Length: 444
Image 1 (cartoon, one colour):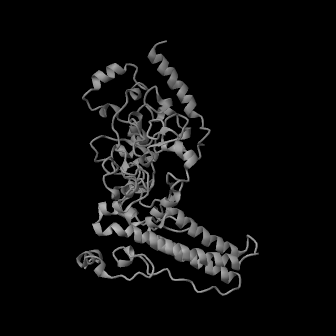
Image 2: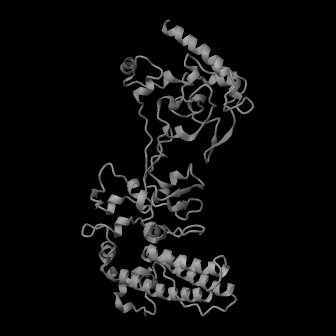
C-alpha cells in the first residue's frame, strides 16, 4: 500500500475518531468535539492536530466571523483579539495560537507561544516588562529553604521583579529537526530546501508550537537571598566536593533544608502568620548573601566589619559591632520579661490563651535570635517590641496587671543616627565621626 493510500486510510480513521465525543470534553462544553477533523484540518495528519487549519475554515463553519470576539483575557493580559497579530511580519492565523495536539483533545489557547512574538518583553531586560503579563501576581512561591513568599502585595514588586528573578530565559526561535520529522519523511530534503529560506509562508495554518518549542520563558536564576547555592559558601562536605557536577543543592536540602531558613526570613522580611513583607534595605539595594559572607579569607563564615568597609566608608568598621551589642542587650531584656510572664502563667493548660501568648512571644524571640537581627535591623526592632507586647498580653489574659514594658530605644531608621548607633543608652554625639560624613548620611 502506497504512502498516499496510507494517508487516506489514516484520514478516514481520524474522521471516525474525531466524530466521536472526547472522553474529556463533551459536545456541550467544546463545540469542536462533534466536528470531523476534515472540517477544519487539511491533510492526512488531521488526527494529530498537525495538519494546517486555514483561518477561512474557522469562518466558513459559521461560528467564527469577523475574527471572533473583540476583547479577550489570556493569563492576566487583556488585548484586542480581532486585531491581534495583524501587523506582524509573519502571517499568523487562528491555528497559530488555538491548538490541540491530538484529535480527541480540546482546542486550547494558552500563553505558551506568546514569547515567539513578544520576545523583547519576555527577555528579562526590564522588571517593568514582567508586569505586562503578571499585573497582579497572587501565587505563593517557595525559597530554596522552604520559606513561602506570597507575591500578592509584595512591596518590592513595583521596583521590579528582577530583584529576585534576576535572570529570565530569552525566548528561543530555533526549530529542532525532530519537529520536521513529525510531518516530513525526508528531513534531509527539507533541510536542503529550507536553509536560508523563510518557511512561514509554506506553513500558514500550522500551529506555532508545531515547529517551535512552546515552553521558552522561564526563570533561570534567582537572587541568592531566595535561592541559596550550597557551593557558594561550602567548598566541601562529608569529604565530597560540594561543587561537583552531580551534587546539586537539592541533594544537601534533603537533610539540611532548614539551614539558613531563619536568616532568609529576616533578610526578605517574611515572618510566619504575618501579612505582607518588610525586606531589609540591604536586599532592596541589591546585596546578595555573598556581599557580606563568604570572602576568600573565610569562606562560609559570618559577616565581618571588613565587608561593611568594602562597600562603605572606613567609619562603618564599627557599625556591625554596635548592631551586635544592641541586639544582645535587647535580647537579654526581652528574654527576662518573657520568662517572668511564663512564671506568671505557670500551672495553666497548654490550650490556655495566656500560655499561648507566652509561647508566641518566645517563638518571636527565638526566630529573631536564629535569624540574626543584623540582617534586618528595623524588622528586628519591631520583633522585639512584638515579643514584649505578646508577653504583656499574657499577663492580661491571666487576669494580672503586666509589669512595665521595658523600652527598646528609638526605632532604627536608615539615614538616621539610630540606624548605626543601635546600642541602648548610647549618647549620639556627632563629634565621634567626621561632621561632613554625618551630614552626608542624613542628607543635609
